[in-house]
Image (cartoon, rainbow, N blue to C red; front, side):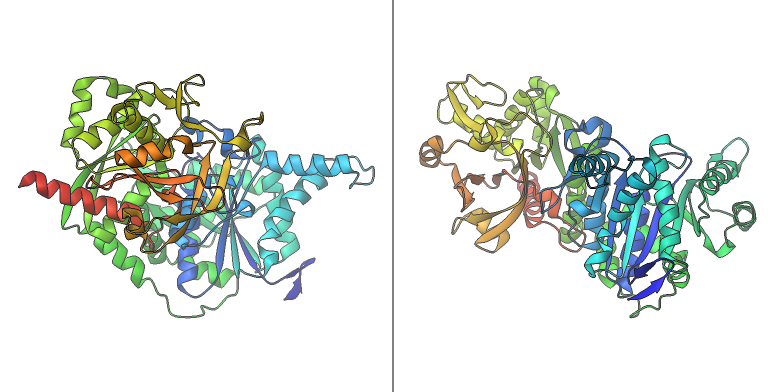
Length: 547
């Protein structure tokens, strides 16, 4: 630990900003850089600061923001934290995702308590100080050599201004060689002109300069290779060393990006600017093995993902990536077919599921599309097609089994039918008197005991697991005895509250529903075992059909 600038520093900081347009991939660039720094021996964490006023993404529509990623400590966070965990194989927390809403909430709470001693509370210094305090929070733990901070949105956006000003102040406080800024921009290619255009990037950097920040490194998203004359032009007009103008060309898969960034020498440039020496020789062998298996499958399967938000695949981002991880582990390419549950009321479309090698019914909330999900479950059960249900998907499996096997034709969830005579899925007791929506569900990691000899125990190869939850409704234990007598068993139960976490049908080749979200814990180096087994069973089913 040593003094530099105006504060004591032992952790190095990298700030990643974006310009020209949103959705350029700051999260992927941040995660890729983090992976490269890990590969030379540094401990790294990544955090995301979002400029929207929601306290967290928990109440956001998936169509607007994609999936809500849940951490072990129960934080509802931005989907980029999923990329951080999948790439770095680390666990994130509430500290890794902060929004404008949370910053203002914290400041106003302090003001109400009198913490500011009667001072007039202003954006500068109070809001910016709160932002900086959150910048430094992970670094103060002493666990990390390097903290990468991704600033959401675009430079120049009104809502981003306090964050950009905070980055400027943080660089001054931390001092030279302790904090750098990477700016990600777009180099559009005009087909008619046959050239890459640099002007949008120049204007983006100019906006950043007006805010008092000179970027140290320029990362340029592009569809075409960047010729040397364009790099020189960007270097000259953006005041960035030519070696620090980095090409980020479109890749076949996001998992190629770390290797592409290494080819551009991004990791070494960062280390040089931070005055750091690699702790070991770069070790990316496991990552390269993963890519080798992913790109050279020996077989393939088609799996239907039945959901209500399928028009925007980012709403199910972690599920999609979990299939990628399982594909590499099994060397079996998974062709995901996104199926709208609202369309499955049509018998012809329902029968099209017969062409699938597996059916996954995805999580979600609300009544829209629920009957289509229940129909998909029934189709998989009757036709012995491998089935996997997640959260609401498990609940749909319980409803379908109740209606068509137990004869409870009016079985339902009280989420959709509060007055159903057979509430096989019901609201948890602790949820019944809640009125606030944000942060009030059953959130985070909870333990689960697995039934000896069950498929669940075979999949996990252990007797107790811990998985992440995000829901309000549970299996109604009043019906458990009837279900188990009819052939659907509770193979996973929470030991603290006796809540059913896993339901399976032992007589089916693969019929497993889980109340939690296993997709949130799957990483490149540790594919989730349920997804791996599901893909294996889908392949077995495919070969059975062929025979």
